[in-house]
Length: 156
Ligand code: HEC
Image (tube, rainbow, N blue to C red; front, side, top):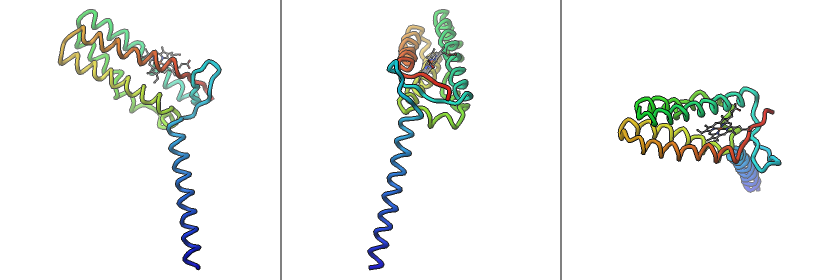
């Protein structure tokens, strides 16, 4: 009898742990968001976290302009240098509190954008083909458009 009761407690503990894990996983996928009346998803960030993201965004714009101009001038070494500055290396500066608040879909688009900048940099140095770099930048900018269409940031 004692044995049976122990099993019941054990199963109870396992069920609670499963529930906790599922909740954590769900939160990590969903992020800290609220629906918005303009059909976009509002990501709720602190003042510092929002400032970090918006600073990163303004750098994205500066980099995109610089890479584009360098490609036009067929200066692919400069294009590679600038593109690297918006590559995955910038992610290491992100506040650790930020990542769990960003929905998985937005994180995926964000990482993909950094990786596309890194790819532009390495291809520019290896292939030295301005038209190829131009096409890569054109494709990358569709990421900017896609993310802006889906997400915005509120300071909460
Ligand atoms: C993963 C999502 C995502 C990607 C990719 C992305 N952005 Fe953004 N960007 C945002 C969000 C969210 C905002 C805030 C919009 C709001 O709150 O209305 C923003 C805002 C901005 C702003 C305004 C900054 C300010 O000071 O208000 C600029 C400029 C910008 N993005 C440029 C870019 C460029 C250029 C790219 C592509 C190279 C890009 N972004 C890619 C999500 C993204």
